[in-house]
View (cartoon, helix red, strand yellow):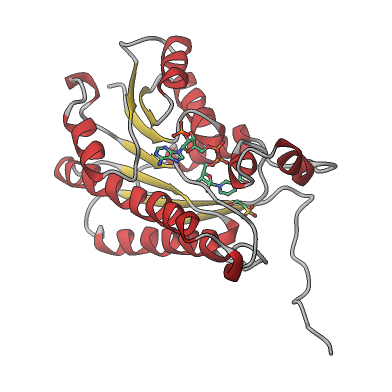
Length: 251
Ligand code: NDP
Ligand code: 8X3
């Protein structure tokens, strides 16, 4: 039977690349994000309405998530894999200069959005005793860096939530994976720097960053392991990225 994947944040970057990757393997897709035109273009490109269902939704809105799930056509009701990918960083300044609205948006999207989608889909998976939740975390959830304040903290939440889900799901056949990418060239930094193309491009300049396809491949690999294998976490960085020394303030 053809399997179905629900991908949030499918209009760009990792989510879009995941849509392409799963489509290539013949999966049915449910693609969610806020930009309808991009969703419709993907639907057309990846096989049309019979294999791709699109739903315009904001993961921050629990009612919209629930309604979207309830309204799925019968052929897309049984979701085998949920990729909780929608997310963003806003700003890279120090905490004391950050806008509280930016913090709220990151918490609402990266934490609550993951919770809303998981809560709407997980009971059905448990009922069928079949399902895999793939969360997109970040290296920022493990390693602190200047300006990472709330963004990194939201991804630390995603990491621990992934582990706690596994703890709750013991005794079921369900799987949970947290993918933790490092520097990857997508629209992520354009969003982080609020449309400042120059700043966003500068960050990738001279690097051989991860691509969205690298991460889609990683997601697909985790999902396509044999059913008794759970990949708990995968941390992925480009070769050009590594850690630096601790910062020390000398007087
Ligand atoms: P992009 O900006 O390219 O893609 C983000 C996607 O999330 C878009 O499709 C956007 O769609 C969607 N999205 C954002 N907010 C919402 C919302 N409220 N409701 C629904 N969809 C939303 O970035 P990436 O592909 O890089 O990011 C994907 C995930 O990967 C994020 O969780 C990010 O934190 C994480 N990540 C990124 C890294 C990187 O370096 N690029 C590294 C590590 C993790 P739309 O605007 O149409 O709603
Ligand atoms: C995105 C990676 O290093 O910009 O999660 O925080 S980083």
